[in-house]
Length: 255
Image 1 (cartoon, helix red, strand yellow):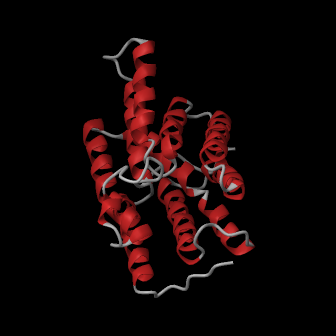
Image 2 (cartoon, one colour):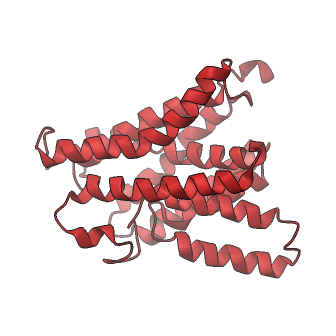
Image 3 (cartoon, one colour):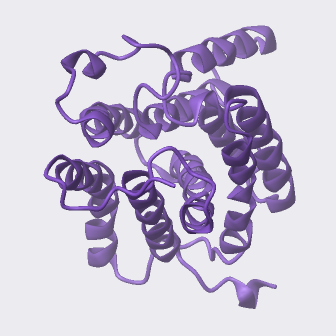
């Protein structure tokens, strides 16, 4: 089985950002997830990304040399990504949309916000200072509330926690993935049951993660570059799509 683990972290993350880009292009060209095979297929491909992001945030928790710097970096990344995320969907049509939760609680900021709080959940779970199980549970529930306004809501946060606490057990990770995404889809997206069902395509990430060999990559210099590339790509591609939308350089197709 180990001989089948042929993908390093860089390769899997690259697959994730390609899938994410396809998904976000679909949202730009086909607004509202219409019932048509083209946007649906693009969204299905895009479901690969979120579980991979959660998986590697959890892996980063166990591999980082300084968890405080890692946490700071994630929240700084979330702050930068917030403006790119809102711009991609709304442009400059209403500056109030840049104020988190001004118009509501769901999907008011990027998934990076929820991933960052998932990292905090892992810190709480493995904290040696917090020994009370009840206190840990309370803090994790409060973190769910704090992360609720991000893309994928608190589902992404608890998935980071689940991937971390079940590290090395891919089947358990897969079962928690289906459970949390199922709850998220059918609870928070009842107005669009087709899109809610599409969320379950996150299982397509599991065969990819099964190929992970536990290594970042063979070249240290390339690893250092790719680390910052993956951080920069998320807000950058959102900003580019926002500009293309603003200047009508991509077609908008309604079915």
